Every structure is written in structure tokens, then in C-alpha cells.
Amino acid sequence: MTIDSVKEYHLKRRSFVILPEAGLLVAKLGTSFSHTDLLKACGISDKDCQRIIDNNPRGYFMNNNLVIYQGDNVEEGSDWLLSEANQHMVKTFWKDLKSVFPINKQTKIFFGVHRGKPGELWPTTNPVEQSFFE
Image 1 (cartoon, rainbow, N blue to C red):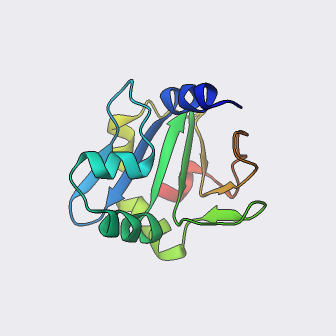
Image 2 (image 1 turned 120 degrees about the horizontal axis):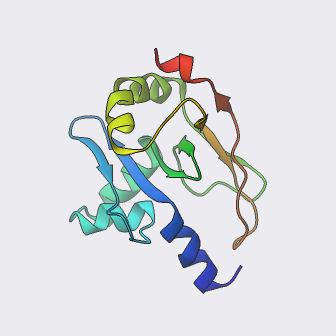
């Protein structure tokens, strides 16, 4: 995947970060923001961006898939997963997620991503049923 195709991928998805004390931060439609770009666009410092990426749920919606994970600097071949505490926090944002994204009965939800090689589409992991949120 080239730099242009990576940007194209980021344009197809819509990234978000959950800030438990503030709410759901969602990238504007048509932007190619990474999670760090999204946070920096809000004036968040590099140090705080890293803390948020490491500890808070973040993810994206694309092709009727809702993918949520946390962390940074995972080695190739490893998974970014969502801690149990953050899984329960995401539950409290379910209505917000549904109000922003076109989530329906066919939407697949994942609490993880498997890191592949740079430029590849990284597979989702740890599928979750929508009933988890009820």
C-alpha cells in the first residue's frame, strides 16, 4: 500500500476517541485524520495525546464495522485490544456511538486489531455481539 492508498484508507474510515470526562471525539467526515491527528487538531499536547492513545478507547467505523481498541507501539503480529475496564466504559458511550455512526443489526463490532505490516489492511480481532451493550 502506498502513502496515497494509506491516506485513501484513512479517508474511508471515520476515526474517534472516547474521552471519559468529555465525550466522544469524532473526526469530521472527509478527513484522513489518524487518532493522534484528531487529538492534535483539538489542541491536545503530544504528551497528552500519547497518554490518551495508551489508555483510552479509540477506533473507527468503516464498511459497517465498528472497531474499538487502545494502546500504541504494538509489535507487528501482535494485537491492540481493549481492556476489560474500557470495554465497560464503551458501554456507557453506546448511545453516542449509535447517534454518530449508522450502526444497524448487521454492524459487526470488534474490540481489537491485529497489527500487520505497514501499508496492509490490518485484520480486526475479538468480535463482540451487540447484545453486550444492552
